[in-house]
Amino acid sequence: MTDWLYNGEPYYEPGEYYGFVYIIENLLSGRKYIGKKFFWSIKRKQVNKKRKSYKVESDWKTYWSSSDELKADIAAIGEHNFKRTIIHLCPSKGVTNYLEAKEQMVRAVLENSTLWYNSWIQCKVNKSHIRPLRERVE
Image (tube, rainbow, N blue to C red):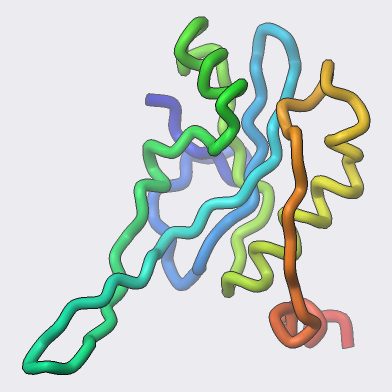
């Protein structure tokens, strides 16, 4: 298993963060993928006829993207030929969504399929979702 790297160091604990934006790089071809992953998911269960919500850790430690093309390359040439790097640690779901889309747009991931595995960009963000980012700027 290849560790997630953040600032060049292995990253093991989510801390107070909700999610992260990452780049996975094929070390043989140089081709890359930008995506996002949430550290947590909300589960619900029925307790005494009431729905209770609780937070559980996601599969982020073993996650390798939603891209079928990237996953096929990983299966073909092995995880050791890929580098997983966290580029943003995010305090909320909205910030995670926004920064993923921003990175994908700035890097023009859809414009060159020989450099990028990304085949689509999807994002729905309201300015209230990125309040933590706006407060840093203002």
